[in-house]
Image 1 (cartoon, rainbow, N blue to C red):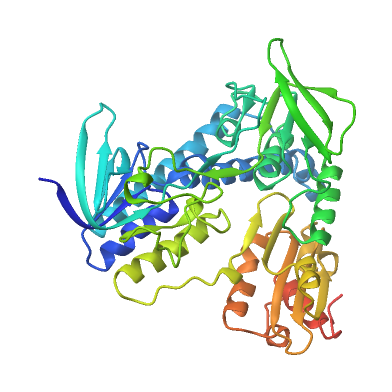
Image 2: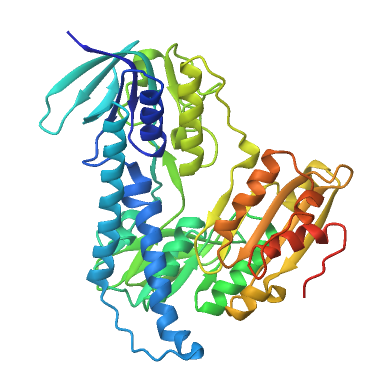
Length: 465
């Protein structure tokens, strides 16, 4: 007889494990099926967390080489890449164990194996040795996440042509790294290896970097990365790769058409995005069809009764915190509560140096929609804490409705802005006006004062210099 559950979740990433924990908290009998040997999904195992560990370590290494001397600190840093990887793996291991602890605490069961839907209310789990276990569930939540998108004509080859997972575990610093795709993943990991000694070139099909980011911020960001030593070939497509020799030979040509060229590299990172993971899910057994590769949803409900979907595998930004929010909302709807996610207030962050962070509408989006707006901007060069920390690069920009002053979007580039964007998320969640932030006291001297000064600038009364 099959094991019976109130909820069975397929996928143990940020969406899946948060859904399981919340279901346990609400007293449901819940199982989470995850095919990896650890919980946490891509984000925790081979994505958000290990990349941030390497970003931090590489920033410290570069600071020791280039900045410490200016502060009166004399050091002679030596790169120990195996140790850097080891501390990354140790952090990941500690966090995955933390999720297991939360499962036990909240009576959520982890079933290791590959899950597939086998008809209404049925999930079959296949473990590593091929044996199967059948589960019955009143509700099934699909939280299988996403996987790296491959590039036609450029197959993955271990330590030579890699995806984001491979780029997190290179055994040595390449002399030249070519990053295909100027999005978040490519620029973050490209930054890591540039700091560790690689020559980094970024090839992007579009005529700009970081599509979707505010245009003014993107231009400032590209100038900063170029100044640091990264080079860019925009409006260029990669059509093939040759790995028969000692170096990878990429064939590239102008996106608008033109003669092909060859670009050489020791390692190529393909970072052109991610696609929903739906392989072998058994969607056809309950009549679910994908749209543009994603599983469509209506408030997390699929077209099949009792089957729900959250995270990267459905519509919306492919962000861990979006999946976490959907997880809680979905489970609360299943429990008869009022689950909700405000998609207009989901922040984005690029964890390079300087960092980039944003929430809400860009200037381009507001202009396209014909929405009248006011803007206020404040540079970190005029922020006293950033100045004494030698972190004066970047700015904060606030966009507010021209009639009501309600905050519509905020865009930042500068030191630690990923930690500060949350202030404006709270402000926007409560429908704040720019004047509300402008009249809120901020501690001095802190970088956060730039957030207030930008809000003050919406009405032209910036004071700090």
